[in-house]
Length: 133
Image (cartoon, rainbow, N blue to C red):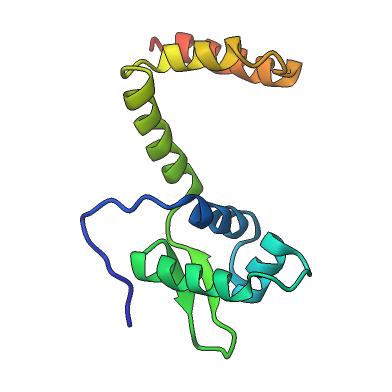
């Protein structure tokens, strides 16, 4: 059965995002490799991981190579695109479409921002200002 492809936007669930995080970090993986990353060696959850990955394949979230005995899965959607979609949705729904309000809220309510993170933020702001944006 081939994955369903449509114009409809598919939003990964929290459990699917956990699997995508593993695939984004490690690249292509078998179900066993994803299971071990999610649950460790406690033996629980293999069939859950298998079923979730089959559902993700049918939704078009992952691609599957079934030419080997152990199917190998890889992400069909990029981390950056997924982050952008979730972030855009959050800005629209929670901050009335204002990215600056989201940033101010995040920085103002998170005192643990490291010096390195602040340097990266300053560099990005400087870049945006120099480009006239």
